[in-house]
Image (cartoon, rainbow, N blue to C red; front, side, top):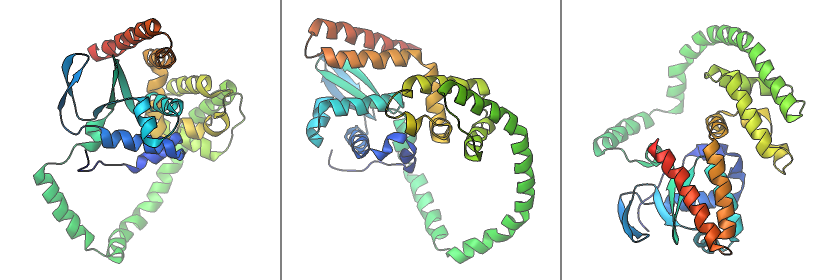
Length: 281
């Protein structure tokens, strides 16, 4: 486990939890401890294959590594599950973590692709900044005027719908947001094909999650919930009722596991039913 590397993408900083150093540390821990190739392990009396992006771990193990409270680790893992970054499947005495979308971010290029990319990258790297600037300067000047005209027409077209979405946000969240930055964020998502109805679903979901909490002021804003990096995740979470039930059951399980083994077993079976149902779909 002490050799090799993983890729860490800058877009992780777009996550609203990224300002928490423990959140970042635990995310890096999971990336670094996940297997990069299929590995067979003995789990619940059976040989099971851990695929790339999976690891056997626990809140207690992570808390021990960082010398922090286990409840703190649990809360952070719950936020990662809500953000569709990880999934946990509970087995007797073991929990299998899956880093979602592992292949999309961590799979290595082929040797041919790497060599070719390195050669091209080296050649491009020899261009000076001045050469690059002059190469694109003429195209930029020619396209700027036409681009401004197109952008103006697009804003005019999208503004009525964007204002409707902002009005719905203020009504449902009990806020009074105005300003171009909020409208531009909403227009950006409309431009990408999201509908007003989908954005209202996100509003309702985030109001239910954040209203009345310590995070309301910071995160219950149009810019935050409709940010490009958050929109897909927020919409999928709003539509995934089973996922909400799964997280709730996990919270109950963590509380019962050391106090009521019968209840913990019942909760674990319900969680696995939900997870297995998703896999079957």
